[in-house]
Length: 99
Image 1 (tube, rainbow, N blue to C red):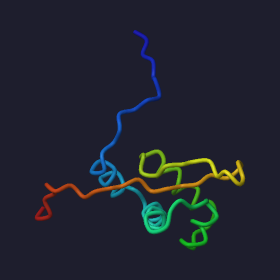
Image 2: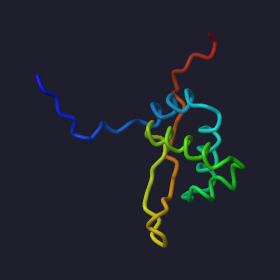
Image 3: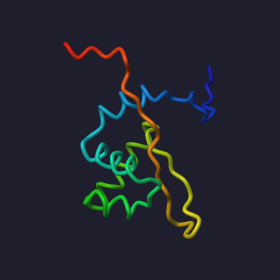
């Protein structure tokens, strides 16, 4: 049996993205927070605002993109750069905080 991957995944909900964000390292959460406040930003702008090293910023952005929490777009003034924007996340209403 041969299975083909089409590359088009089902759209994630804000609640699913919230759950994924909770499982990421603190650097990824910080980068998300920076993007949430002021987006879209280039990697250099994120690094400057978050006060993170370049490698940590790249790693955080990669993890956020892999989890579909951040969008990447082309930066028109310089095609070598990319713009990053946070996708919406929402805390699920049915979370049980008593556990």
